[in-house]
Length: 152
Image (cartoon, rainbow, N blue to C red; front, side, top):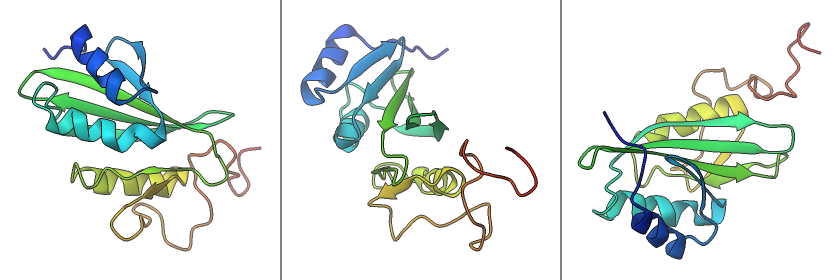
């Protein structure tokens, strides 16, 4: 069974490279969107971490912000890690794309863009809808989305 705990010295090294890094709990860290790409590159390319797989990326809509959540797996070291990024700007939410690091991000970033309206800067081209028709107005997983004849 995979472990959620990273050795404290590895966490300290990450904090040196990403000063905004905050440990939220066992196997859960938060980082600023400005430090996301360098942190993820370090987690993937440094053999001490070896997080070679992005298994899931999703987003959460809170009343005051969005949060993009990444789940990583290190197959060689049998570790799991959740990385969270808070997105304060709900009018123009954006975080860096991770497509350059993990090919699996391509489809997952498109899904989050389609359903939540979060833009991924640096995405190859621009994320387009994946589940809904291009003519669909809005992003249905946002809490402020009004279903026609539905949610009030």
